[in-house]
Image (cartoon, rainbow, N blue to C red):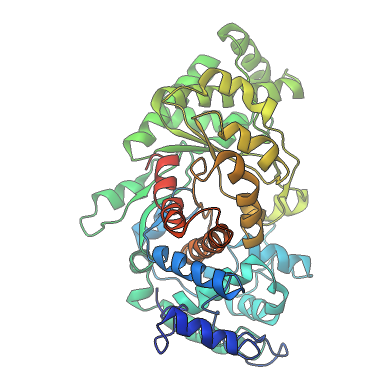
Length: 509
């Protein structure tokens, strides 16, 4: 990564020496480095961040982390666009890169009184947006609000390890950092393709609309100067959710992309199959579904046709629309059992909780809220049909921690088709990752989960998020070694597999 690493200092390469030194200096090296909000403080993420404080266990964790810290990054689910790498245009400024597009950042600043306009988010009402420098000033002045959050850890790593920043954001440093970073981002080594290489990314999956022509993926594949791997993911949410006002327009777009009439159920299903095949031809290995819940339906053909006609004509009820959506999710499972595309289920979230923000600023702007989830009954119709089918594979994510040990681990502990998705979104934070491992491992082991998925829109956060996951897993496994539940050789094999073998296997990369 650019800007050097924040791990073993060059002057003290020995883990044993490092342990002794840092144990002696707990009162200084580990002291809080924040200063009053208007001042300056060094930005130097601690080399042992997220590792255990107890010296013996910390030594084990260091060795485990060191064994995987330089592994290639496998990113099987995220939201970075292929256009970014196909165009390879320089990033313009730090606010547009790190603040405005990151709903982890904007949601917390919004909670403290900053408006979306002040954060540079595009307003469909045409209200003026703050200029990037003003957005960056607002972010720096409120840097203290991120203390204790996972976002703070990621952004510190992005700033220091990727972008070479050595002072913390603050009111006093905002303009200095804006100018420094804007100049640095114009350099060739900070363009998207150069960063992709420096991040050590081996595979990157995007999320794409079924009607997308995938021109940017194709451009990358056909570019002899490009050696990376960027694959699309088939995300049909707007075509499957029959309850939304724009569903008919989505069907028209699908018809145009596929060349198949979507005016009846049979044609609609054929059009979806057609686009899945198109995506597979462009390297896709997975589909992604953000349904309200994991329920599926499997109606016979005539009944499905009648249901589709009612909803499509506008004469169906709300219950009809929900049932049709569940039927279409069931069709996605059936198709996955036939074409082998992995079915990722991201369920259990209330999208667009604040309607006015949704109307003005659009989706993915920080006001989606987790819901209680249920999987045992919801998944049974799908797993009854496909759960032991060797062609079918699903990765199940949730924002409800209460189902980790009660439902998901037992399901993954029986069905060969079910992988446990990594802690996601509000749970992709260090302590939640530990809780996930504690909740699922005793029932399902380490090898029924999908490794780590960064699920990010922030390109520069990819290495930071993967580094966080590797540190957390090193810390967690070191505890099992220290308790003599597993030995260190086993732990080393497990952590390697969690960050290499498992995401490849779960997403068939």
